[in-house]
Length: 214
Figure 1: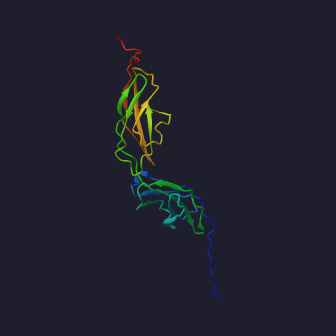
Figure 2 (figure 1 turned 60 degrees about the vertical axis):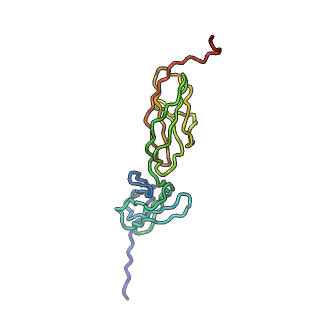
């Protein structure tokens, strides 16, 4: 009676990979470029899965089971502005290891074209400015602006998460005769764009008289 030969490869399952990363320089409005790394020498390939963020329904979009050299995948045909989740599994002869943690990414680009703020008015202790949204939001709406005065982020929260706001009065200024530098930062879900810097010098102004002179 002929014998049957059974071969067993004495290695464990692959280790858990790190969460995939996104190469933003290779993304477009409708594609996301996903990369990952090998968790160890027992790995022989990878599988990549994707879902719309929050749906919990993952689909295998790349099967590189025995293709160890491929550690990237360009996911195309996506909807601009929508968020997606990804995870990767490492595979070897004995099976599939523990999946990585999820990475999520929006199918959009950096905002672009934020103009210098407009000077509106000033007093000896305030500066009023206005601004317009960036020319391009990158495919994801601008969800907040930030205001920097002398390169320091203001912390009063007055314009935080108010994308409709396009004017503001900076108060409690006391550097009369010294320049204030002012810039606006517009932020979408993946990146930001800074405006050019506006420089304003406060001039000393007399207080409003209590009575009208004769």
